Amino acid sequence: MLKGSLPEGFFAISAKAQFDLTADAPSTSVSCTLTLLDATSAVVLPGDASKASLAVGGIATLPFSTVGDLPPDWSAVLHCVGDNVSASNVKLTAIQVGSLTFP
Image 1 (tube, rainbow, N blue to C red):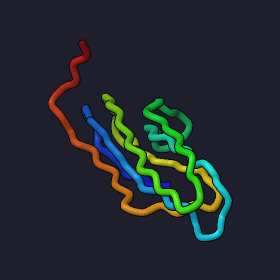
Image 2: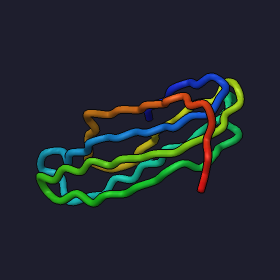
Image 3: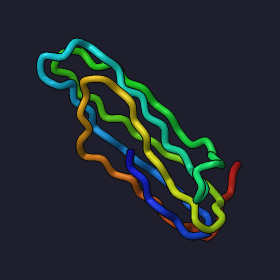
């Protein structure tokens, strides 16, 4: 799990992670979610989710993005689950913007 605290404001948030199947492990899958949590982790805003299947010797890179108008003391969290996988090149970026406009 990768977590970053954010101040109040409008944010565009992106994340990515590369997953490798560990040596001599059978095929498996990995799934991740990028969510926004309040300070108590009791309130969750949905973000983005993705899943990949890995074969022997396989590598997968999963990208994520979400936006939010956040009150103070919220966090962006990338949480991944998978058996026999390792994560590398993990990045979590939050860019504060002046406002969010949706078409």
